[in-house]
Each structure stands twice: as structure tokens, then as C-alpha cells.
Image 1 (cartoon, rainbow, N blue to C red):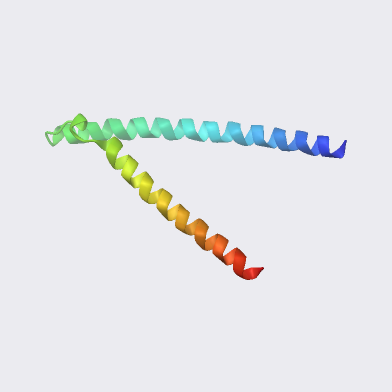
Image 2: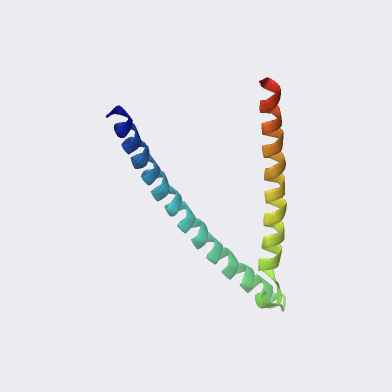
Length: 85
């Protein structure tokens, strides 16, 4: 019974965390749209069109760099864990 109650509490907590993260994600998406709009206006004043830039490609490259940094951090952490055992 105790395990079932703990599992239920964890599920409730996870559900609440999911709701919070969903709200944060929606806010980030809204901010992204606003930023993109102002970037487009700025580039238009300079004589460029936003469509001339391949931002998706740049985004993928920056994500790959970030993922590689996370992998290095995880390797360092797991390496430290092994030394302490």
C-alpha cells in the first residue's frame, strides 16, 4: 500500500512538473516569435530578407556543439564517480 501511495504522489508531482514545463515552453515559443518578428524588421531595414538566411542550419550546428559539450560533461561526471568507488 505504501509503495502505491508513493507512486501516486510521484505521478502527481510529475504531472504538475509537466504542466509547469508546458507553460514555460509556450512562453519561450511566444518570445521566439516576437524575437523573430523584430529580427525580420531589423534585417528588412538593412535591406535583407530573413528568408535569405538559413537559420535552421545554424541552429542545428549550435545544437550539435551543445550536445557535444553535454557529452563531455557527462563523461567527466561518470569518470569522477568511478574514482570515488
